[in-house]
Amino acid sequence: MKFGMNLLLWTGELNDSILPVLESLKDMGYDGVELPLFNLGLDYAAWGRRLDDLGLDRTAVTVRGTEDNPISPDAAVRALGVEHNKRALDCCQAAGATALVGPYHSALGYFTGQGPTGDEWKWGIESMQQVAEHAGQVGVTMGLETLNRFECYLLNTHADTARFVREVGHPNCRAMYDTFHANIEEKCIPDAIRACADVLCHVHISENDRSTPGSGNVRWAENFDTLHEVGYDGWFMIEAFGLALPELAAATKIWRRMFQTEEQLSRDGLAFMKSEVAKRR
Image (cartoon, rainbow, N blue to C red; front, side, top):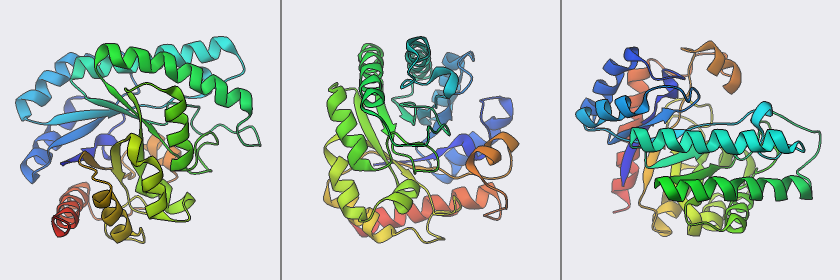
């Protein structure tokens, strides 16, 4: 079991201002961090060396948009999505990130007014098969993310994501579980986790209002009980958002402050995760 913190609480792009945050997270007792991979042109090998020096392991997160949508009806747009996902995997390899998670299966925040068509599902599978092949070559695990219906329309339940992953059919293409999205979309939390347990590689710990885990209405006992039941032993990665970055606040629809300070959220969130895991040992 490893405990991590997603750096999107502070920044959408790695830069020197994040170094004191990284040192603080290490001092708190975090095992690692989740790196934002939106700018694919940074020197991620250098960041990998810095993180090694700090003793922090790492995963990474990325997204796709309308211009590089892997399920677009335009073959050129789909090809760009595949290319950018492969480049993100290369960045992971350079940084020493073991997993690339996120909703890079389709365009974030784009809607057609209906659910996914048969063609869109097929295009998504074909796109991810190409990306998964590259993931195998660079030694990175893909963790595809289920999103709620207000953020995407391809994969809204963890059962859907598990089915998608099984159809991709590559050992480096797996699913991640997210407590925030599950809290919105799933009728039964234990059933949602069991539905994806065989392909599960990563977990985002996120409160219903994106604030400090354990302070809101997520059904935490059901989540931790079932993750323990299925034998999950990977990352518990806090994903929280604040007002530090206007572009992220707009994307995540955060209009008011949900916590005291980023340090408070990080410290209390880590204590909460460790306490919940310890109860079930």
